Length: 107
Image (cartoon, rainbow, N blue to C red; front, side, top):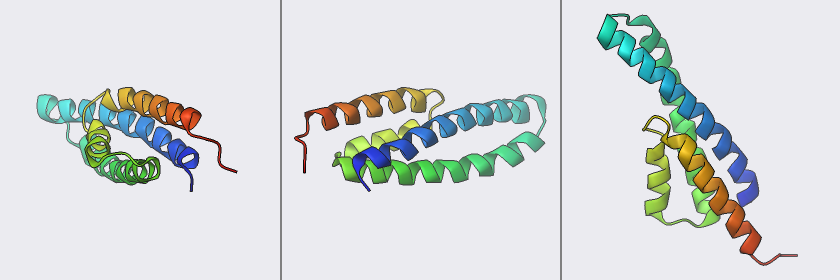
């Protein structure tokens, strides 16, 4: 698997996890602000599973792109803050595309 092919699953999961985190935040407000518990009981495990997939996709992309461990962990943590995964998805995509454009062609 190349860096290019590792970027696509990362991007998809960054958007999904970001969206699910916003949904989960809404569920948390419903649970603790209004006593409505059922939505968070459904959304929490789904978000947790998707976040684990995001971590794997981030690790895969980071290893292929030869990022530092600090950068990989930073990108992983971006999936825990509402809206930040969207920002980091753009930042990571630009970084990978720039690195690919600068890298010498192999072949």
